[in-house]
Image (cartoon, rainbow, N blue to C red; front, side):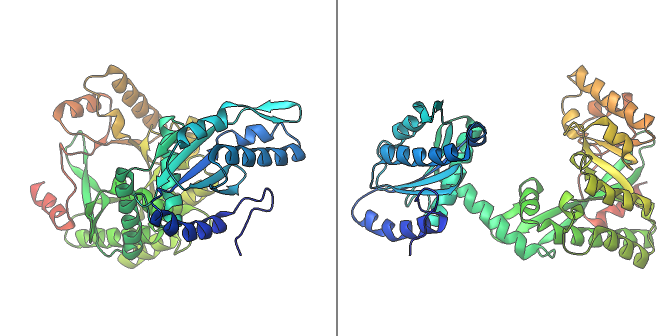
Length: 421
């Protein structure tokens, strides 16, 4: 039985996919060029906020009639929720003009005239995908592209298909690698600006995908955050880093280690072993000084009370809290004053143009003076040449990281820093 929406008679998600998959082979065999159009109302909440419940129902029926008039009775129509609709068209003909007509004329409900604002994505068969489930995903992706570009409609492209395939490969690979398989850690030294001595390192994750090769953290970490594979990966990073720190210490090199902690790891009900338990167990087992373990959190966590409660518990247990990428998210200064952080890490974006932009210098100086006034030290990221170093040193920054000093390196090469000292 084909499943439908009880409110206006359109197909629901499952019914649309099932009926669409039944129709697609016949349409293609008959020489048609079917495509899925995903439509989202941008202003649904604003519309219904001015309507009674009965008028909101009338709006849904009016949208159905408008879709039928725009695309004809051969089109397969579906409604997924209040503001999202989809259409399977037998042929790519005049869909752009039809979509424009949907929102051009106002919808009359009762005594009011309401204008629809829509954004749409189009996924052609079989270029975008060969089944309805994937066609819908492709059409949703195209719709997001249209929204970002400020367009009414966007068509799923071969480039988007390549990106989707890559994203799926990364997501699948992360599930396989969540225990650390294929992952490696490298460490970027932090250098005291005045003395030139290496005082610590930051652990950074690297991943070699079996099919894609080396994948940048900038690409795979957001996927790991979204899929929550960052939680087991985060546990692996903590254990690997602390074991490396203990090995350095046994060989006479006593360095602090910086470990990036994801907001997902600190969220209530995150699953897995709590961050506090992992850290305390490993530090006790390896006889490590907790104050030499720097937990780097993002500035965006400051307004999250539940997460910050966890951070305060970690600070009370003796771990060193660092606010990473400070200045990127413009968090309230009052929240910074209440945080248990002991270090501010200045976002690389402020350093890139520091030589040519006096305002960037002023911002770095302000952040440094703010940190010192709160009893914190500063770490500045992204130092790539001597002019940048001189500029940030003039602002009073304490510690620097960047290619000017060292690129990230494996644990064994860090031991060479002792010989160079």
